[in-house]
Length: 513
Ligand code: GBH
Image (cartoon, rainbow, N blue to C red; front, side, top):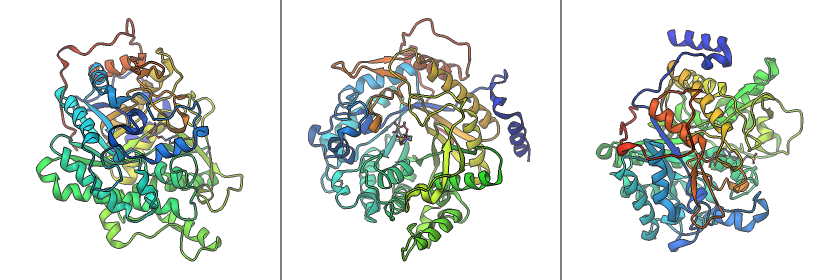
């Protein structure tokens, strides 16, 4: 009751509630980290027998899709620069590093019968180097880079993908369960499926809206649940790690308080959030009723004999329910929703949802067109998760800001501080957030945006031979927040030099989940 009242109170205070002068602090056992993903930073796209991923194929076949023409063939070249990467993490003083394993680097064909030891050696070295300095590895098994050979068999639209992923997960768990205590199975099913199989924006760029995108959603979620189940059965007891999934939980608000907008926002939340969260967190499991109703009805009208949204069997519903130790929350921004004024192509995801998005005109824009700063949205998203999914354990597995090149990234600093304020308030109102991950440790290959949008705390000089990394102002500010556990709006470093903290001490806490 007290919590509900507090929430109400904060809603009343509105979005300025978190800029008040009361100093809120992150608890001592709160974990701070930074993130990257394999395709975006590793380079070495064909080094040491690595297999091709769908992103290698996609950007090699469509160089015209990349804003500045720079693909991930080399990128920041972390395949060779990993020692420097760990040094940067030590400079920041983070507790953990979230990175992903490239499936085709370790299993070049995607299948478990051919293991690439040379590829695994890269992760052996990286993990050992992290542990040497008490930085916890947080490993994402899948961050968009499917082995091309599996795509040739239909990729995530093939129900066999569930088993392919499970076998891959088994090999990686076996190899690293003793060293890795934080696992993320899959990063952002919505990007994989809706953008990858329902549009040409992300690899494999197959616009399969007849049912491909929704088949993908089902398979990706089941793949996650199978891997979770596998960890529970074969690894949990001995190794006591935590397994979660990272979901894009941006916030969706009605553009104003009309009845139509209230309906529109309900749809947006059901299709953007509930589609992935309900099967795992809702009481009855399964996809949201609203999504089911809309897609079933439209499918019929469109002349299909079955719904484009596949059914989950009772066993599948059971497998999915509760299949996480923590929710990986990727949060970047807020969208304002109203019913769509235009006819979308049919069938399509946009047509199913039937809404239009915009963003506040007064919100500060990042370099990426979709990204504007609205810290209150993080607060509201947290409260929404609490009320709808019963106070889940959350680790923010991505949050960040894009700028152009340059070390004095004041806009990133402002955005970070604003969102930390909102996060602290959400935690005060009983949101169970155990950790925060800055996206990204360094500038990287931002998919089809190439290197035209910079998300790094560290700038990467892509023209230089060693892909030199330099700390931005935001890196120093983040370091200061980690050290002091509070957000001081006035704090400024004397210069942009960053040093490894004295005696390299990490708090080494485990998140109590
Ligand atoms: C995350 O996606 C990803 O997990 C991460 O890899 C990425 O680097 C980071 O955010 C920053 O984008 O061209 O307008 O159609 C966030 C969701 C998905 C948002 C792809 C941008 C393309 C937008 N992103 N999307 S657009």
